[in-house]
Image (tube, rainbow, N blue to C red; front, side):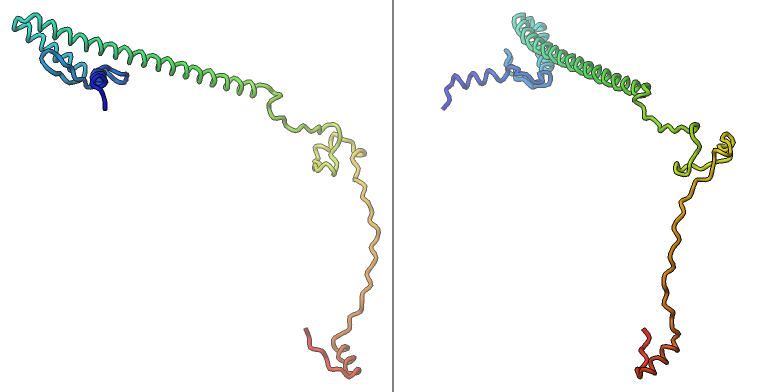
Length: 197
């Protein structure tokens, strides 16, 4: 079972801001006139109204008391606002640093790309063929044109030598017998003619 001390300590800790958004948090303030509930700004407005009422009724002690309560919540609100502004400034600074880093990386990439495009050694090289040193030969796969033959004397351009193939031997062919001759040969042998396939 809990002791009364721990219960009272937990009760006192409820009204203390423990981080988070103090500006929109709802507080229960125990003032001289009873409890006042609301956000810090609402509590400040309520205590200021009570202080004006006390001044109108010539109760300077109560007016000062209400003003002190309002000042407490005003300090709490301004401190929370400073923390929010500091957090926002820190986030803005980090965002600016990240953006600057991204801009630097982008500029470096663009410089590398420009250097790579400007450097002829990095660019893909085309195949170079020397057309002026020798006339086109049939083995090169190029076709001779009349323009290319004008520069070269006619003696230099000679028809390529062809290998002569050895003559082919004719195949021995069997003489074909006519179908009538087959039938006669079959009759002579006494056999019936075979069915045509």
